[in-house]
Length: 231
Image (tube, rainbow, N blue to C red; front, side):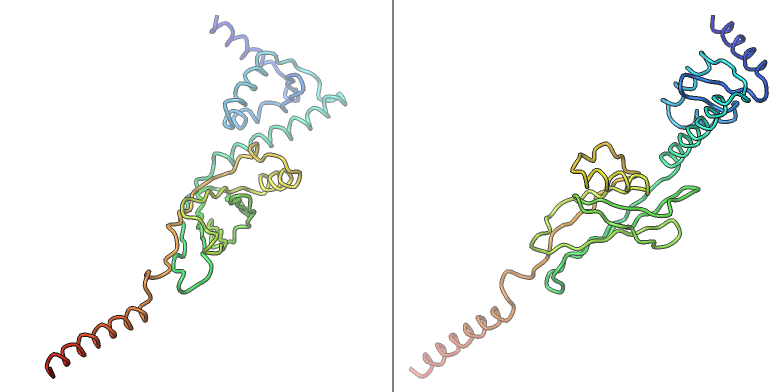
């Protein structure tokens, strides 16, 4: 059954005219040049393409409706390929830094350094940290930096989740936040955690106060010892 179906499908494709358009419902693909691109996107697209091969039919490209469908199909195929490459083509690595010395500064600084490894790195990256939207600064080739400040009294100890978005995801995120809707439907290109161990506010006892106490104790023992000698 499988071999007969394969031969039938190959025979149908081999007899398709050069200017043919293969149509599946509302999805249309211009010729078969996008086949490899669509298959490489996701398993969902692969299933869609398989269904399209099973129920394919040929129409003349000169027909106005066919021309419109061809335009739609090209846009759909390019969009699917763009989504696939932007989702699976990049690898992100994040290094984080925090300031913890509350004796020198009054605010805790959080820095997330992002490195992207991909052929076509995003021109801009954006981040979301606990409802706060941030723009990543360009820190070099394929490198971005996200930073924010928190008062030491408000900064909590623990992990801060940082979600990174490209231009499209950031636009969707802003719209949902503006409308007061849930942002769970927007998938970040990468997410990482910045760990904050807490702030160092110095010793429990002030050094000047401790020195004064020690001096008083020394003077007390010296006076007591002198009194014993005189008596």
